[in-house]
Amino acid sequence: MGKSRISASMMCADLSNLTEVIKIFEEEGIDYLHVDVMDGEFVPNFGLGVDYIRGLRNLTNIPLDLHLMIKDPEYKLQWIGIKETDIVSIHYESTYQVQRALDWMKPFNCKRFLAINPATPICMLEEVLDYIDGINLLMVNPGFAGQKIVESTLKKAENIQKFLKENNKENIVVEVDGNITTENAKKLKNFGASIFVAGTSSIFRNSINDYKDNIKKLRNAIE
Image 1 (cartoon, rainbow, N blue to C red):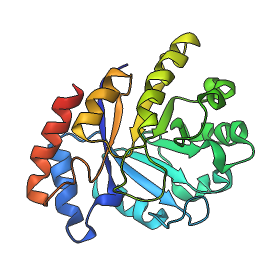
Image 2 (image 1 turned 90 degrees about the vertical axis):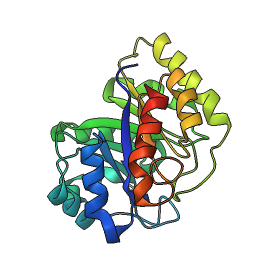
Image 3 (image 1 turned 90 degrees about the horizontal axis):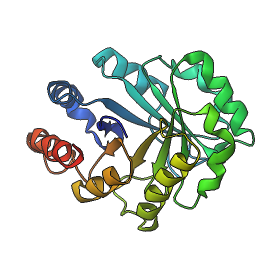
C-alpha cells in the first residue's frame, strides 16, 4: 500500500492568492500539486494548460501530478515539459492505442498512471499492467470540481486492490480522485489507495485561513 500522500487539486485554488496557497502547501508538506489539463473535447470543460504548468514550476519545487483529460495525449506530451518527478495520468478512453501512448511516456522517466472513469471496467487494466506505475481511479465523472462521489466506485476501489493482488502487481500505486472527504479517504485507504487528490471536499474548504487545519485533518484520516 505504501506511504499515504496528498495531491492538492489546483483546479480548486484561487489564482488571486496562489503564492500564499503554495507557501502553505510547502509548510505542510503537500506531496503533489494535481493539475487537471482539460481540452473541452475529451471532457466537457476547459482546464489548466501549459502556461499554468510552467508558472507553477516557477513558484515551487513540489512535484506535479498531471491529469491529462485530453484526446490523443500521446501527440501532446512534448508540449507539457514533463519532469522525472512528475506523475502523468492519461485516460484509457482518450486514445485508440493506450499501450502505445503509455510507451511514448517512457522517455520522460515520469510515473505513468492510467486513469479510469467510474464506468470503466477494471478488466481494461489487465493488458497494460506492465506499462504503468499507478492507477488514477476517478470517483466522479471527470470535468468539474465539487461533484458527489459515484457510490459504486468505493466497491470498485476494493475490487482493484483484489485485482492487483491476483495479478502480483501490488507495487502499482492507486490514486483516488473526486469528492475525497476525510470520511471517504479513510474508507479508500483501507481499500489500498495511497495517493489522495484533495479539493473542495477537504483541504480547499472554507477560507485560506482554514487550509492548514484541513490538511492536518485529511492527513490524520489517511495515516
